[in-house]
Amino acid sequence: MHRSSTTSYSVVSEFEGTLLKNKDSFSYFMLLAFDASGLIRFAVLLFLCPVIKLLDVFGYNDAALKLMVFIATVGLSQGEIEAVARTVLPKFYMDDISMDTWKAFSSCKKRVVVTRMPRVMVERFAKEHLIADLVIGTELNVNRFGFVTGFIREADIDQSILNRVADLFVDRRPHLGLGRTSVTTSTTFLSLCEEQIHASVPEKNVNQQLELRPVPVIFHDGRLVKRPTPATALLILVWLPFGIILSPIRILSGLMVPLWIRTYAMRLLGCQIIVKGKPPQPRGAGNSGVLFVCNHRTLMDPVVISTVLGRSVMAVVYSLSRFCNLFAPIPIVRIQRIRDIDAKTIKQELSKGDLVICPEGTTCRQPFLLRFSALFSELTDMIVPVAVNSRVGLFHANTVRGWRCMDMIFFFMNPRPCYEVTFLNKLPMEATCLSGKRTPYDVANDVQKVLADTLGFECTNLTRKDKYKVLTGKDGTVSYVSFQDQAKKIINTFNPFSN
Image: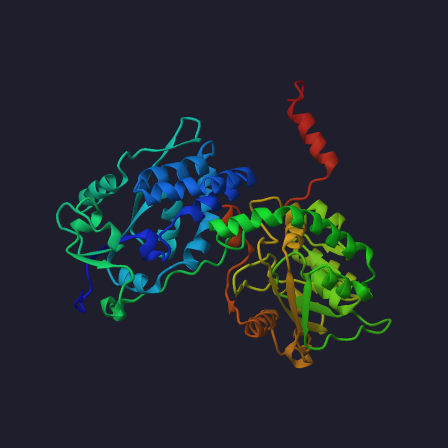
């Protein structure tokens, strides 16, 4: 159906199968089950997949959805579901966005998203990334303790959505309705719209003048790399026992094998390292070390650079789990984010040898670079930018909400983890702060840009604090308290004689 070039005032669009290319929401419930609860719930939901599919085939769509909702949510706290919807699901939604539908959706002034999934699973993404004004979906039942019962409030989902859309547009019908052909009946919201367009949306239905772009997903969490369709989820479960055996073998070989043959040993165990550029030779005795400045993809970045160089290079870190610290195959120096103290620490270590530093201060999975801290540029003129990128097949090797001590284990659980390391030319003297011609911020921005250009990434001004505010609601500050101080705090808390 052809539309005029003028902008429609209001649009109501279906989420599954319209704004998203895929109409099947099963994989999103699998993500919720895995990241909010764990492997057992994930496996149970996969085991019931044939039942869910049969219910869909025989027309019991509401029953199929209610079964998925029950298995994925029963017993979870409402806050845990909201956290997964905020940190995990948006990336997978964005990967499945239909741009043609999005263009038609964004060309309207008032935008409403309709979904059969629980509203809490979609609302954050729709409002923050699709710029929707309102999301209408099913509502989870929550008991007085804040835990989800596994049931939804709606008996007839389509009729409930129809009534709520009608209540929203009392004075005037929605101008445009976007939805699947299979749902264009008198009992769905599309019957209320003046004009209906069925997915996929033709280009002629797009108002190019008012086209917006979806807000990109820069930060996300969760362990799974791919959307767990039934086939992918089955592959994950089948591979998991092999990965659990293979991961400690790879970790121990990295600790026990000499550096000069570690690359070959990793290759035999299925790990690949691709090296581009020419690594600099080690500095002579009495000279200050080289500062390798790299972007931050996983905690393995400094280890891989040290492996490629064939010599032990100290890594500068801010926060690292005790487990990863214990099994780190290279020396580590910890900084405190106190500028003067950190500068003194890094200078002292540079006088002893080479260092690897990640000025982003935290990892970023997406093709973006966070703002670089300028501290490194003030400390030496021996700066070598190193562009690193990692490719994993099943599991991400970093997390914010999960157990960070498992980061290294999850990295090596992947069937064929791959690292690409590109050594760039050392910064010329005139491009450093010590030349007196460049400020620390100029140097940091230059290094960020050259690394982004090498990797094909995009520079941002976002920081570690921005990442943690998005993913946890906190600023990511880590406080270090000794075991003795923790014990004293606990004793003082329960001391009945304290004032």
